[in-house]
Length: 171
Ligand SMILES: Cc1cc2nc3c(=O)[nH]c(=O)nc-3n(C[C@H](O)[C@H](O)[C@H](O)COP(=O)(O)O)c2cc1C
Image 1: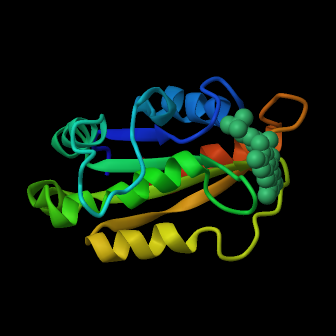
Image 2: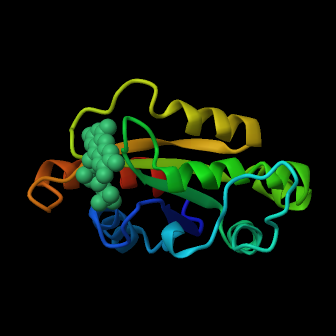
């Protein structure tokens, strides 16, 4: 594959556990990263009165520069983070108002990285990513679940990450 990718980091702390995993993947792939926490993106609004916030410029930057979009989210209460969910809700803007951006998403590739404290990821966590990719006409490259032990990425998780990168991102 080897096209340019971006990792969207959706943690409530910029330099926390998810960032450790994002940095690991960035170093191995050369992908760019964007910290969604640093952006001002408000909740979805049926009246679209929030079009002046950071969402539309950010989406334009993403669709015009990248073919692979990886969502990196911590596991908060068995689900994606609130920051990530707000971002997904706002993709609705790209189907209703900024339709050109929505069209540009078609044919791009989506992947997902979760980062929890538990090695187990509950069934159903991945579904919104798979279904959203389907709905948006994007390819889904798969996902990897990671967890942090003693503030570090364990050897086991590093191995998993390396295989994921080799099999799903570089090929
Ligand atoms: C609000 C909140 C809810 C959490 N819920 C879960 C959970 O349901 N399952 C889990 O494995 N870890 C859970 N955790 C732990 C985090 O997923 C874990 O510490 C993760 O590595 C944090 O990443 P971060 O530093 O990027 O926020 C939760 C943490 C927080 C702050």
